[in-house]
Image (cartoon, rainbow, N blue to C red):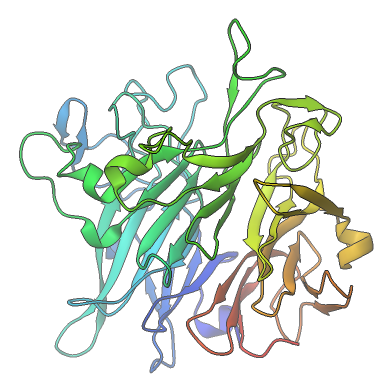
Length: 439
């Protein structure tokens, strides 16, 4: 099923398609959020007037190192607005849930992301819960999650939301947020308004938010080398929960696995109480160039050069798959293709695949990647539509614009495993698609 202008979606592109635990279908453009409930015939549109913190619709008040700020400085998305959504749960008092992640404002100065940053409250994400009145008309209950480091209000590093995943099954209702600096764990069901004088106490925001973790790399040196160093951390577009409930992450410069613990007051800390690093294995630091040392999955010229990981997924055999796709087109940006890591963290065996030769894409940039339960992979290229690829047999099936998807320019894919068979959710330049029977 495809959805576009004719179905009431007023803007393009579609940047996200997701479902919640009540099978509400949520579709996002940069400027609005759309809802199609299972019984609905048409979409309902929500925007800043509905409570979303889009550009021009800031939250009135926000907590800060200086106390409660009224008004909140730049407590809204930066243009173009929404970048990512993921469907959440369902529970008492609400009929569905989706999380909406926004672009933030940066000036990339030395104070960017600190308590001196005038845009430290920009971007972030909304928890959006669906409620209805007595007549059944839908409306939204919106709570803004303003990310700040658990250990100090000096750092508001995570502002733009690049990717989110929501665990429906292993550790139910845990939300992971990949940002422009690091990765957060949020337990949305534990949210409550702050009580007492300090919003960031262990009983308040730290009880439901853990900020933040990331594998690291450093610019053209090991991070423990003597002297000054430049830590390279950015754009965690790859997030995937494995069979143990641990989180695999991939960013612009590094990758790794973040081990799960439930307590948000402890998740962000490394090493953990067991003496082991929170991120293990970690790929990127102690890389010596030319594929020697601890490579950041792919093989850039030197440590700290970008590898542009665009997606991470885990197949049923336990292999972890990483895709590379450029985002900013800076001189060092190179799409490195696709890699699988077998026996990750013990006897890493990394195998590389060419998106054109091996997968059948028409371009080498991989926009997104996910694993199907049968072991095949769905691969999205910048202008190639989708390819369903079996890495064992090499069999491949293309899904192009027309019959199954509105556009070959795919921006995001998700897999709804709450239904059987799983449904492929596709966001494209020209609309949304839900594919319930895969070739």
